[in-house]
Image 1: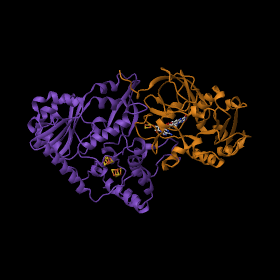
Image 2: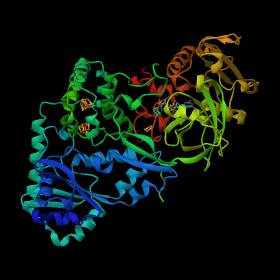
Image 3: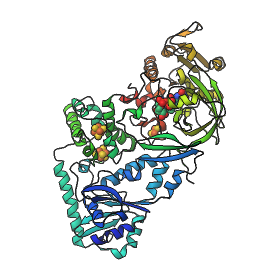
Image 4: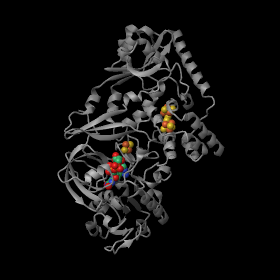
Length: 357
Length: 272
Ligand SMILES: Cc1cc2nc3c(=O)[nH]c(=O)nc-3n(C[C@H](O)[C@H](O)[C@H](O)COP(=O)(O)OP(=O)(O)OC[C@H]3O[C@@H](n4cnc5c(N)ncnc54)[C@H](O)[C@@H]3O)c2cc1C
Ligand code: SF4
Ligand code: SF4
Ligand code: FES
């Protein structure tokens, strides 16, 4: 396997600094907590530890789609924020397999017809993605139940596989080939033992996932099963634990909803900004109308908001683009103050569907 | 410089015409012409206040300016209603698919409006009046809560011809009213033309749309023949911000006019 190269732990940061991008951000482990940090600002050991840890709580989405940003200026306001976005380049380091797949989904939404979101398009084009295998799965991870692997298969420029003493590096695009060529002096060809070690590491993670998710069983066809269960009692039990905080959609690598708003920025000058929004919030689809009147808001009751997250991800999205709106990363379960775990909900869909179907 | 679709095109407010106590028509000229199809919508910016989606009520064949008929109902529309000729606005668009006018060619049309919902339909009517040979008979059915809320009263007589009929009703009459009383669906019960080669197009309050669909089904229309202008809160206008869906359809890009057949199975279509 000539394209697999070995990079020793003590040269890793040198390699990462060769990845193109004015900003190079990696998910690092510092004092036992994780954060997206500039590679230059972090200790090499923290960067390395970040690549060996389970997937981060905040996905690469939070880097490619900021929580809030100015998207236009008008009136007397000068300058276009898009020009800045179009020029900024960055390296995103430590993107897990699930997040790389999530990018395929975000690309579909953000780049497809009728026209692309110009900010996402610019950032995506100017970003170099350095993926990483999960040497460890988080307790809540369930990518295996969706038939996926715990290492990047798509949408990476370079991928790293942690093994003893260093990492194996592999290019996934022309951009990645260039990085590898430039870093040639840091790299050596992977030996057969190192490749075997990587395969064993991948196998261990797969076994960890199989074992921690052994009690869950998902329906074969969500589009068929999910809609038939919407009246079942288990939904009401789960709903009782939801406080509508919107945490689940915020940490999800595939949830992309935002709300736009305008504000003054000087005499006759205005700016338009956007911020993440959540389908779980009451204002999300609230309609106009005089105060005190009943407005025709869709999904007015809590249950229909709650079920909408599942319906969009497992029912509508397969109809729209043929893929699920979930990659099985488990982040929503980690964040939920009500302990709502998608694995449990979807297994109940399966049970009820089997009972009635 | 890259093209930023989030930035509004500057536009001049040319004229404000009061239609009813709560509805005004705004004639607006954008700095760059905006070519729209009947039924496509624009995002109108009131500078510093925000945007709201509106479907032009003027003819799609005129690109230099457009008319937008607006019900006063909240933040953006309140400020808009206080604006005067010469004010500065912004426009983005057009968005959405617009009415399927190609598909409708050679067919009879039943056009059902409720309240301010006649506004978007007027752009379709303009289009049909400009291409009479493309369509069969046209029945316009219009309803409002009371006579003072009827839009475009001056135009009703001009619309009627051998090809076009116009029928109007109000829920609550007053002393000036000697016309029909009752809900607009009462006007849908009998037509003196072939309803098999016909499309129904309707815009109005959600609850009305639901009853228009049910009445039409009762009368013998098939779900595929019924097009409804579905309203949702919108932000981006082109399928990115996520909020405007009915099931798998995003109204800003797949609508806002959608075939009843495509939405009837989704609970969130008419849920109030
Ligand atoms: C495709 C489309 C075409 C429309 N055409 C017309 C028209 O021709 N004439 C007309 O009077 N009205 C029309 N509407 C409804 C109009 O957009 C709302 O009345 C308007 O957004 C209210 O804004 P507001 O800021 O005054 O109200 P607020 O209640 O203060 O609105 C707050 C926010 O919610 C959004 N919002 C609230 N209700 C709606 C709604 N029904 N649809 C979309 N966004 C909403 C607004 O954009 C705003 O961001 C249309 C709506 C859509 C979706
Ligand atoms: S994180 Fe949990 S409590 Fe919060 S909105 Fe999501 S499901 Fe509800
Ligand atoms: S829905 Fe939950 S498990 Fe699925 S991708 Fe989003 S955060 Fe991860
Ligand atoms: S308005 Fe943003 S997705 Fe439809």
